[in-house]
Image (cartoon, rainbow, N blue to C red):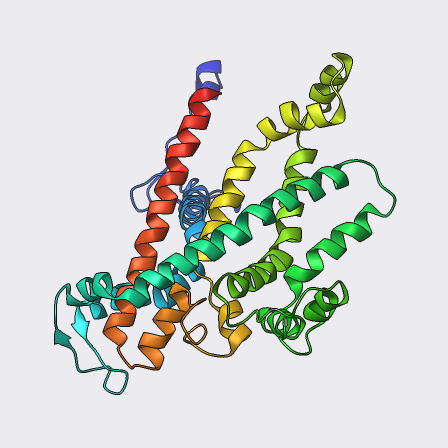
Length: 347
């Protein structure tokens, strides 16, 4: 046989058996191609679905975490606020709160004509000033003393926070006994130095002073810790430079500490003013009456609203007082914003 015969494949005759494919040969697709990418395609689709789920989770999970706050705020904050605003435009009785008679702005105009409203507003302003100014000054002084290294400084910080943790009912009842006319400890101390007994509850200025002392006692330590935290954030380089320039501790306090604490001081002033505007528990428990004394001498806006709504049964008028207090707080917030902008420009 020649070499040409060896290199030429012999034709397969009809009827000859065709050898089967190898066992490890891949199966053909319907179109004739080999299905090598099927597992890869499934993995790619799974990865794409996982990526989409991750993107949705990263985008919406923060909203889900904070949604309980907004749900509770809408139920217990926003809805009562809107409902109170709507009720302030109606004549509503506590006995029949579902029956409303439209009166427009009549409840607000009656407030402007009511002498008790203006007296409550003056009392709120007076008690707010008498309680806020000494409170913040004392808090600033205490924070300045605690800012230096003292023995048992942690103990003093806890002691200052204790009045804030005391309930308003317990604190007010104790102070009411201290300011008692016949058997109060304060009148006993005054009598020991030859001063006649003072009728703290029935006097105008004396009752407002007594209520202010309760507020001062409860909130001075709280504000002192706020000031202390702000003082500890002041760089030590400023104090070292002032000390090298020959500044005393008092001069360092005036020219270094106070300018550094201006935003914090402004914050505490606004918060204390808001708290004074909403003052309710102390004057109510001090005399045990919603009128704030026999001649309304220490009735605040909160007490006046309480009297109109829950004793005179005028829910519409009480709602108008609540919204008036809300508008006062908005004005305070705007003043805070204007002062903060001026401070930023001056810096």
